[in-house]
Image 1 (spheres, rainbow, N blue to C red):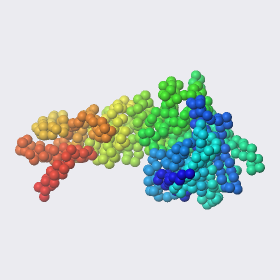
Image 2: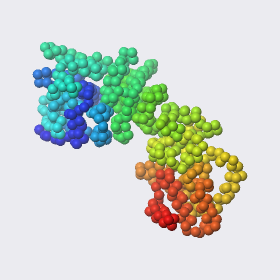
Image 3: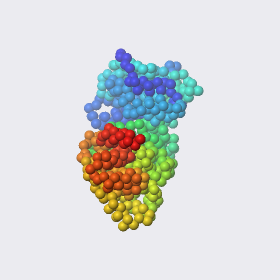
Length: 623
């Protein structure tokens, strides 16, 4: 026998479970039964794939055994089982993404309700047994192996593990139960009637028989769940509670779903689907190798847990089941990627999910978008076929209302007469965008601008041309024509261009290493200058993102626009006219104007030390 220590994160979670403030402790049994069901699914799948596997599949089931005298409850299955290494990796450590983040949030949680909410969001599976048990014993033997393993712990930081010669195939988990405590919502789980009630409530739909002794006097086993697949029953026969518990089973999320989606196809290719949109994002939503996809069944037989071929990556948060009638039971992930029937199911599922999101009431849509908006916008790049449908359900911050997001449809309806573009600006935060020099003329003239602060926004705006016939246009790119100043004629504008031409030519030559052009601006009202890109130039933020990913790009020179009405630019023009272009201080001023424009848009200077030195010198002279 070996005594090993739990991984530190696992140890912290165990302490949370032992001293749990989670009020609904009944869920521990749902978690154990769900694990047992998964083990049976995996064994049946393994026997399809490996005909030489020595495993007994004649009577696959889950058995619950209650011993009132010893106050134990055992959950036993004859499924795939585990090796010693699997037991250690699955129970001794938590390899789950987001564990550290969860623990940090738990430490910050202000009250018991917030802590319970976070525990439920993360889902802790096997660890939930320590809410109701002082000690847990697990015995397991993997199908086809000769030797089993016995694991035991009181959850206090260590566990013991030892080989077992005569372990039956599968896994049994025995809970040495804590005393009943009504104040702590700790029920008597050594009461068979209570156990049956929990199974009926949480696990009735499990497709494997869950068996218990008929009574203390009748040891003969009887099946206590209906085993009816929810997706095969009519909507009127399934209650909201049943749907919620089924969602929790397939997602391992303790919260109820935000929306339920049913789908049925008949004819040449038959399938049924029962899908769920979660009410909040999982911790691993943006982890590259996180599990995604939905469960695939063929004629009620479980085939695959995370069938990625059924949903695109930008819908990776969708949970549920698809039950196809005409696929082979021995299908592989590789075959599914090329299967035409799977592709047809996928297309229909995507359209149904997007139309369901579009039809959500406003309050639900706000909840959904806050949790999954960033992910859904990935589809604007990845799924051109459904781009218009995705744009229809997108919500964006805008300058129209600081407290409420807008749809593109609402933006278009509010557009000014004669306005041809949907204006936007990308940036790191709403504050930096609203204070950007690029916004000055748009705000002054009452044009609404979309405020885009998600990293994915930098990508999709480059790929998507427009919406409802209106092109997207960055307020930081290209020329802007919002109509000249009131009363300013074309002749006056041309005269101004002529007056400033010598200054602009000199500044362009002075700054030729950093900019490709210096021109008068029509987008500035209060700032002296701003940096803009050509219509198809890559943005500095996107350039930075590519470099962070190790992709070197050629340096893009941008355009310096100056405000002819600003005293600094007007004074620079006068000084240049009187002192000429050879003056070193004037050249220094031109560089300062450029560097201030870089800083104003949140950019990084090539030589910050030089900038500080010059500013310090100018301030000194001004005192």
